[in-house]
Length: 251
Image: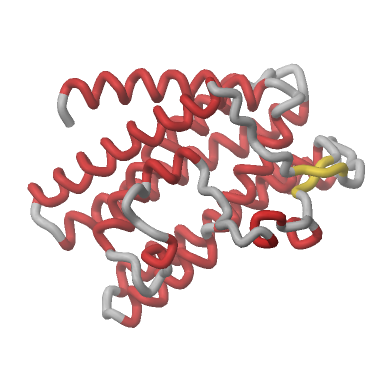
């Protein structure tokens, strides 16, 4: 990674760190942020499970096991965020019940600025579990997991300690950060098992550069006032000191 990319990485990461910390600390934006995390973590489970089955079919039992564990972790992470939302009497909206104006007009749903930049040049068909190339999956996911470990820890540490719900969420997010570190480690090892040191270095550099571009696109969208869609609705009130609180900490 050259000096300019390193500098832009620091700038982009710093800006996103500020935005994410503000969104998780502010009680008004916290529920929507948690919902986005729940959808992202839970949504990756089928993909990782299918990849695990593919690796097993290809004879790579080690990778198959790592991917299966990764999928189980993501399922647990989704549950952590779902339980956290319940503590604020919220839940993720039912997307099946919403109108789909884009489809009615024959338009394709827009990708987020971040992922549009991160996966620039790749279409949705490429990312099916049976078609995605292993180096692309390993390197792109390695960068995301590596950075997520820091991001989740940082967000956890800005949560106030004078609120029981925030303390519960903080513990859950710190455990998620630890899992993300472990995911990054196995993905890097997976690359080392398949590619030369120079190839691994090139893959990491390519996807780090893509991540920098994606962060800048994300910040640019934020500066322009591009908001996130509402992802939550009111849920059933719960006792934060009772069963659901225990589930969150156990998760």
